[in-house]
Length: 127
Image (tube, rainbow, N blue to C red; front, side, top):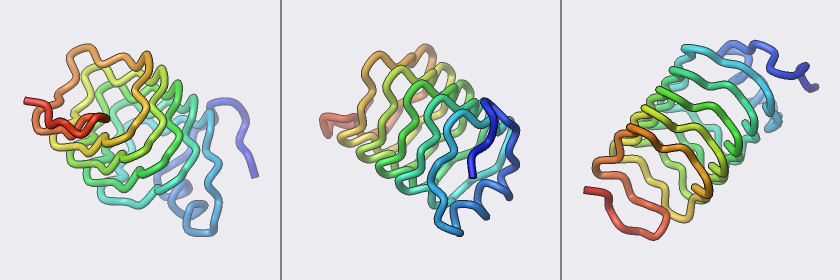
């Protein structure tokens, strides 16, 4: 089941679909959603609009967030190991304490992002 380009999805709908084995959520819109502490390991959220979404403490290991708009999203202490964040908009996102080890941040927009204590793709911890 796929949604039309940037169709609105609630956090509840997304989590129900994920629980039922669906991993394809590309080009969806979830504004101001609360996904704190959820498991979205390996989900495809590429080209999605996730502005202001609370993903703090979420398991996003190996997730595809390429070209996603995560501006102002809360990703504090999120597990983003191996995630694809190519060309993602992370401007003003809170990545404090997030684990970005081996994540692909190629051409990602990080303007004014909070990165204190984040583990960067190369394993270093951001000051």
